[in-house]
Length: 274
Image 1 (cartoon, rainbow, N blue to C red):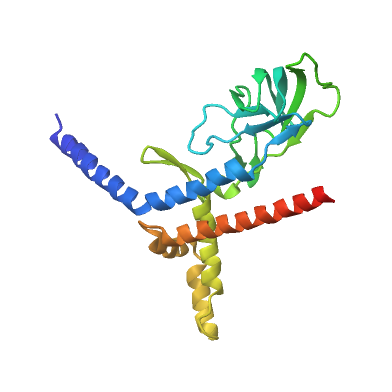
Image 2 (cartoon, helix red, strand yellow):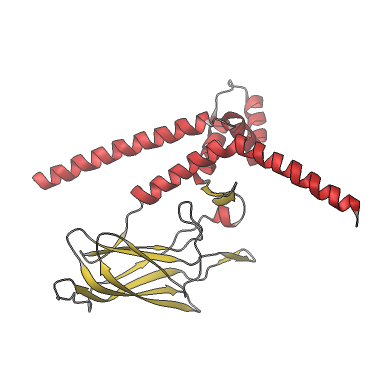
């Protein structure tokens, strides 16, 4: 037995666990706040697509969906308030110039409670880069309502107007490895989009900050803070352990969103009264 290998393995296990523990103390709060932002947007900002006036759906084409790692892309479907369907049949297609992926989804007893089901034929939207060109498995997703039988025995006429097309949006910085999106750490799944947004905002603040009117000071600032690694260091010095700056930024975001929602509600009420 090679004793050095055994000792090395023990030391790696001890110090690897210690580093992981310290890592969690330093960054867990910031990672959690960033994931909270992602979850808020998933639940309250992103609106479901509509198939007529009675059915809503969402296609989840990424590998992660708010603290969950998916085995396959999913579609969730629900009836709008006041409607119930005995049976609903959907055709879901991922369309590209060379290939088309198809899944036929059959759902029973559809109510306001969403039903989730896997899209086994649809691949995750992983991007590939070849000589500066971006290749995607499909450029868009088309969802068509084939059949919808209401609870009272009547049916929707699916011959017209029940097809929706969407073009998925991709964060190229994440696919290129320049930024982080969803990550698995400490036995959990986090989304770091808000952290990356704040790092970009930090860079703008540092480059645009007032350091007197000296051209030399401006040039020095530009030379230093053009590098993302330097900006990340400044950001993390402000957000290690307690993530004070990030928490304030998230509170500001929620405040702006509440103000926007209140204004939108007033506009909608005014439109109804007219």
